[in-house]
Image (cartoon, rainbow, N blue to C red; front, side):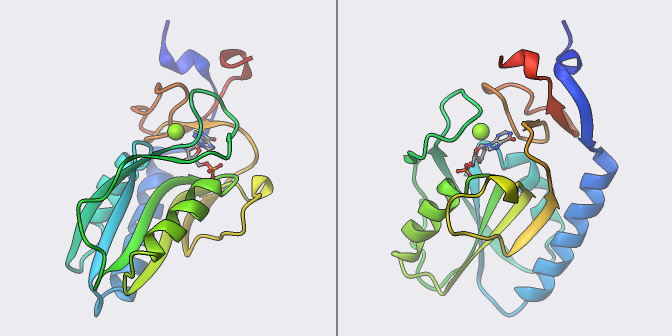
Length: 180
Ligand code: IMP
Ligand code: MG
């Protein structure tokens, strides 16, 4: 039984991901050249994107990680966001860029941005690889976004379904048979 049998179609290829991440990195490099950039990666979905993106950022930066949960093992947001692992750094004096895999309902990032703003960083912005605007319920937009995608469940390049498929090097649409 191969992982690939559960993928209905390829949505974004490895080459397209690489090209997009390069562009985002160049834009962030330009925008943050005189700032004190701290990349905050939201575990675990953004790790692959984070690892590639940070290497395309050519201005000094530091990194930290946070873990939140909003989904359990399903495919629909519960609206409940819980902090599983907090940051280690004090945010004062930093220009924060939150690095996320996907902006879906927006509940997670709405909550997270508010929480981090309360810690008085110099600035705070959001960089998401994928954006599903059709499903947005929270009042939030990304400052940097890689791809706008339709309302389907995406996996790969860090994104999971029930903790699986994160290691696929491309982004695919999961076959409904897997979760129905
Ligand atoms: P939101 O709070 O609804 O915006 O959801 C954000 C989180 O839900 C993301 O960080 C993902 O972990 C998960 N998520 C939402 N849509 C997808 C998807 O299509 N594939 C995999 N994970 C998803
Ligand atoms: Mg997830």
